[in-house]
Picture (tube, one colour):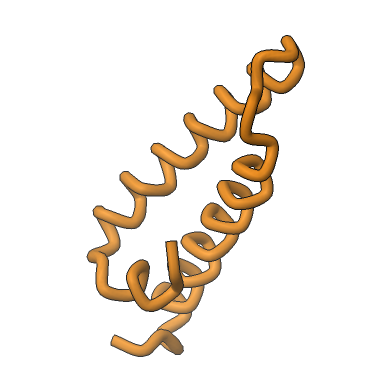
Length: 67
């Protein structure tokens, strides 16, 4: 998910996406530890998406985000 796409979402939608990505990250880690994960590149992608959402949420909270 790109930063431009995230910036277009409302704050509540961002929180829902964040929760979904965190759940997906948990599931991916679980699959990785049990040896069932096939697409290992999805782990860093989800981590980066979580970081992007948190960064944009912090920008909006600080009032420096492009609204």
